Image 1: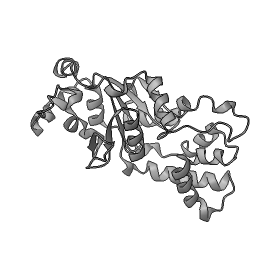
Image 2: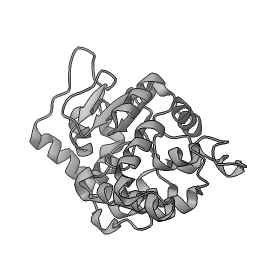
Image 3: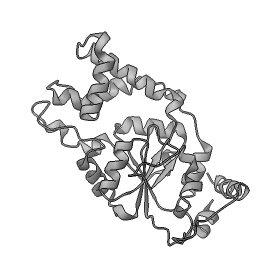
Length: 264
């Protein structure tokens, strides 16, 4: 891995840092974690907030659309919801065993010389659990998460005094850039959410939309799976002339990725 990483990637790569979203980006939305999370949020709305069970799902969707998350929406509406209690309830009961180690993803991450950073709306405990299940926790130097963006939330004297900050708000994006100390123009940002990608583009990041075969206007690249990164954005590893794309055969790519797995 080390010989490939240090000698094969051209030092003139346009990227100094690679910033990854976590859920539905580093692992598939088909794992069942997302569905379990939605059910847990619905249960929270019923059990902790007293909403009718028949309205919980609709309310969750509306809170997400309007405020970015159910927690943000509930606090904005005046519900005295403690963030740690909320995350403990909705994430603490997730079936993490559905997330399996991903050796191919680990190999790709280990082959990246640039800084590798997580940027998620989730809390730190969830991020660490998910990364650990994937077998890639040690592949990242920094986790920017709910606590990073909302370090002042505990100072609020009433629920709606301090708004919850999350992607895709500009404030969240700027907090992440400052926390990571990155140059947006030389930073590649991967996320599965179109609104998050648009926000990333608005603050000057280079953007990769994950989970789609085609780009949006705010996405510089599109990947169906994050493990396609090597094929779609070879500029992370190799110098690319503007008028000439690097082309590798499937066998060449396989051999290069196999080389990275040796030390993974």
